[in-house]
Image 1 (cartoon, rainbow, N blue to C red):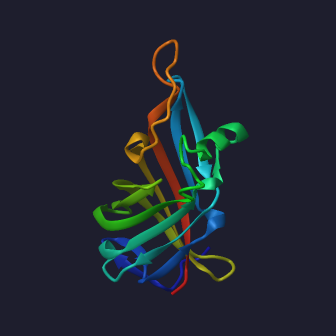
Image 2: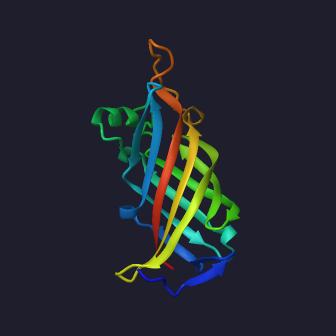
Image 3: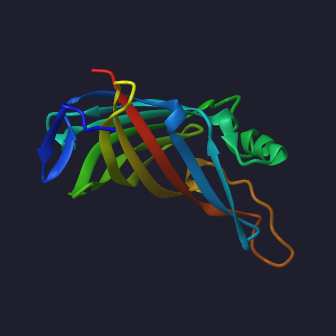
Length: 191
């Protein structure tokens, strides 16, 4: 892929000119990792996410909005996925989406920055900070201008009202409180 013409320099980094980018669902993945039985980790993700990234004239004023289809949760185990969709966890019939809306960009250093915003799971909204890496900006073979980002954060699921658990005979609990979130996103310029 070749670099598109719509670029500018900012703090030694080549970034896109201002505009709106829609998330490409085929190249965007929201994944998570949670402890299981205190001895291992379960990995999963959501197969359906949409949203937009608006690159502002001042890059620190840029913002992101993401909508995740809660029912698209996938850990590779149908029974577990069904339980995660149930009222014990995401309760997808009552709250069909998880949302994130950024409020500010802080701590820019090279191609890494911190994105602060409001994450809503079920009916609870909490401020979270994501460590983000700008992966690049290119023109696809099909003429589309694309940008890529990766991001990580960790949340306490109980802070979002997801408190179901089961004590183990050997001590500890079945499901850990902390959930690591990993995001890989690609956006396509719309304007």
